[in-house]
Length: 199
Image (cartoon, rainbow, N blue to C red; front, side, top):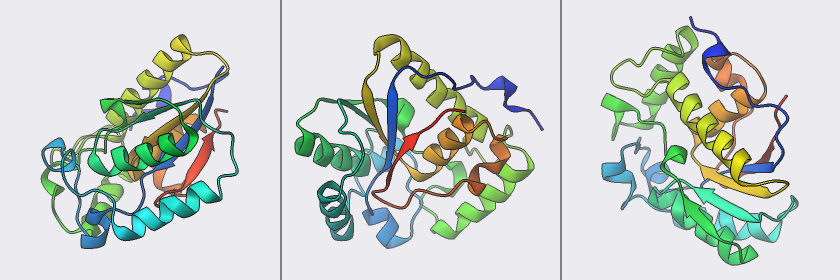
């Protein structure tokens, strides 16, 4: 198993990062894995439950207000980010590095297959099996985004709107934990937001 040394470390960040998972989506309601741009960019947006979650989240927002929003360009994350941007009247920018983890042959399968992938992750987070994007690949693209933002901004509160697995992996990386433990980090529920704290 590879160590975290192959992935850029996150420490001494000069910006303030919040991470947010999209609200409950039509894919969640249908119990489907929707991870490919082919299906996720134009379909499977927020469900009625997700819209309600977003209204509640914004009404109860207790963290710093974001000054910039970056988001996955999948429909469910786009709709989530737009709600936040409208609420705080701040700019937002899509970034493909925040997209859902690609689940390869499991795309459009029932979502119970996530557990099969997570079992594979625990054994080897660097090995992409069944065309699934590996944990290391996800960590690398997210850390590259953070590194770029660190060069572009200073002392800015940035909100990153993404998906469950990518955010789990980013939080694990920031905590300095082995990537095969990414499912041991407390997961973000739909529409949850949390500070990204690098250790």
